[in-house]
Image 1 (cartoon, rainbow, N blue to C red):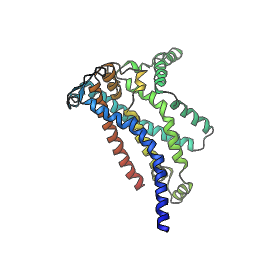
Image 2: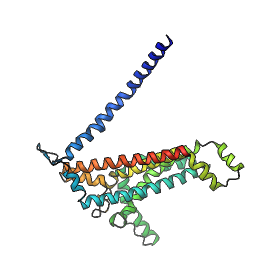
Image 3: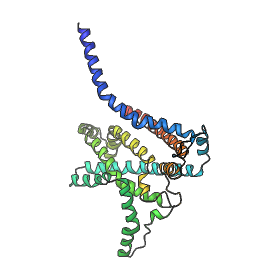
Image 4: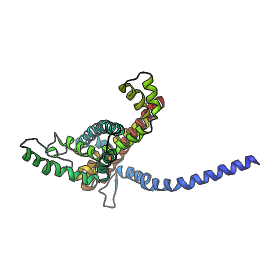
Length: 296
């Protein structure tokens, strides 16, 4: 009798689980899986996105990708942007979180001020910093009598720097709050025990703070990396992929190829390649960082 009751309870829990999971699976399938399958089908064709005729070309679009200099250039820029963003945002977000966790006055004000930019659309952020670099900051030169070159978006040698400034200004506050939540969840007893053992502040940071922040570090590194690889809207309103192709990200290149260039099949091949890279990067990062979490 008890076994029957246990089985009925397990069945009821499983049914509740299905009720909660199935709607999400349906949305996930319609919004992601089906479009991915369709994109892969289109990537095997030569299609302009409008005509009824889709010429099957097999994997020729993928072969052409490896010969496309602009596609390679877009990947080089995207990788540079991603690596710089991941390092800068993680380091600064952690440092700001430590500063706020130290009990400084006006913590709520600082926290709000840092967080507000991430509520702004990236398109708007692009407009803001375009105006900052072309109108506002040059006026400061006139006022101070200095000659600092703020035309970051106007030169291929400095456009990456300008985009990093804009992107970091927008997102550092978001990741800072994740680190701050992690810091505030660390038991004070661990620091007290480390002090008793004679650990100085640096040793306490590396032997207590960093290991206990492992879950937060995983979230931030994976989030910043995947977000940077997908950067697009910031360029739309600031550099338009220029000067030349100096700031053309892989997503921007894909959009221009598929929509503006009317090469939907070729653009679909680019998008599938991008998805595969994103999945591989995310899986490798999560697997590696999870191992460190367990070790910590």
